[in-house]
Length: 101
Image (cartoon, rainbow, N blue to C red; front, side, top):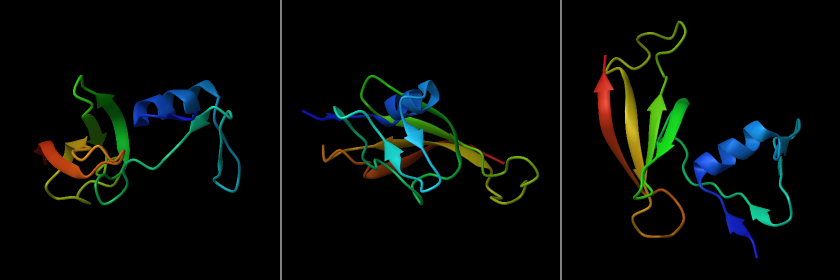
């Protein structure tokens, strides 16, 4: 049986070296794991930090105006909350939690 990974779990695996990425961009996983796309742009941009609350909502801090890119997003960087409201295993709702210039 395959196990679906939450985004944070996948990041932990990447940092631990369990998942490998070569020049093709392909992910290599152990046979008992499966990686699926849970969220992508335009829901979030340049994620710098991710956390998951007890309800399964994913909080993402973005760094769009990071390192010499000041002014790229005039409204400022933000923290967004991503949710899977339908239970389909994919983010379908994004809410801006905090945004400051």
